[in-house]
Picture 1 (tube, rainbow, N blue to C red):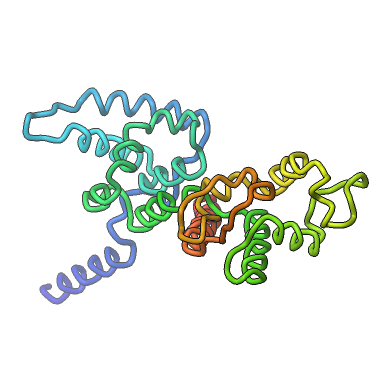
Picture 2 (cartoon, rainbow, N blue to C red; picture 1 turned 60 degrees about the horizontal axis):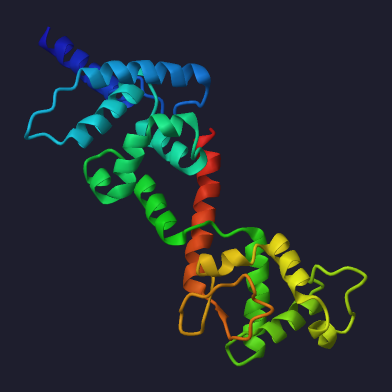
Length: 260
């Protein structure tokens, strides 16, 4: 009898180890549809009404925990992935508005949110990289920055408008029309303001300075909206470019992961 009982206990233990303590929580974000948003709103209202905050308790943490309870235990989806999905891909959406108290809490102190178990290490890392990257690096920006790097290499470590124009022309990357001069040296007589506008439309050159991808040689920020008109030296800032490129890669990874 004792042997049979021992075997039964072992069997139960093995089952628990295999299936885990499954609480019914799916390892994916809450799907973005009107039905789920309405359910979330109703359940949150009920959950938040039940909270009683004592002087020794943190009201923000209790609120975040209420969201976590509703999304995981009452709706069966990952709180961490839901939060990550909304922050990264649905800014300004109705779900963002509903989760705004949580988003504000996490963004204001992501390290504390990680320590409290509200977000995962992955979410922490993406938010951390995103805070330093400002914006993800686009393919168009990467192409343009390649031209700036070539320009830099041709001019003893610092690019300028004249050499950049030449590099762009060599790669047939100048957005010019039939009325533009064929000789790059005659661009001074050409309407550079028009060309600047076209480069902005093609490569979003004003983003280059705003995101710190192009700076002065000493790393100082510059305004890059007039990059081919203004007479100053500039360089591609590799550190800032690398972090923005990493952020773009992380976003691409998450877009695939969170949609599965």
